Length: 193
Image (cartoon, rainbow, N blue to C red; front, top):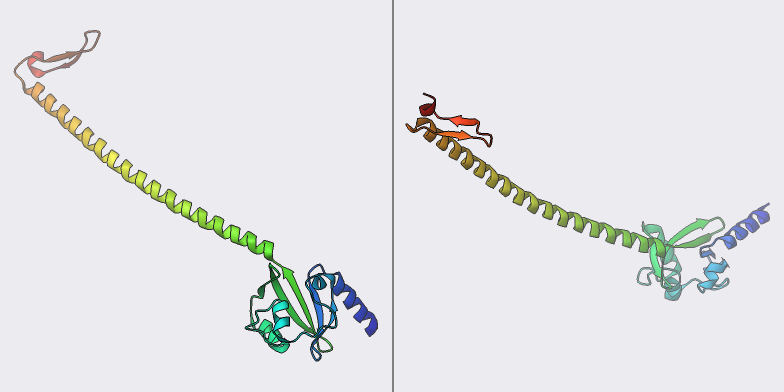
């Protein structure tokens, strides 16, 4: 039953589309590498030790100088996004039974590019919102000035009409206004008396 379980685990590992390795922690050798991992240069039987492995195994060499450092490093960080082979990978390390380490990486390059584009689009949209808000504020200022100007003009016109009315009402001369059909529109008190 144990052999069957091991065989099933190996078949599952080999069928994963992303790079996956099974590593013996004691010997630091790759026990199993699926096709995607082999395409990236990880071969069964190779010892996972030193900066070369750290650089090849999706690690930053200055932070993972040995295999144990590498495991400690990846166990201690929240984000495991690491550049390797011109792509960006999300690295996952899991310790499994028998002193083995399961290493897998998911290519997140396209997702990161989409996130970057989305960030750029949001920044552009934010810039456009700020520009449009400034334009609207400027338009509001112009409209307020226009409203104030029209209000002042209406007040002056009303004052002028009131002055004309007071002058006409108090004039001893006869003053009248007619429409086009010669009907009286206005007659001052001197004319109506």
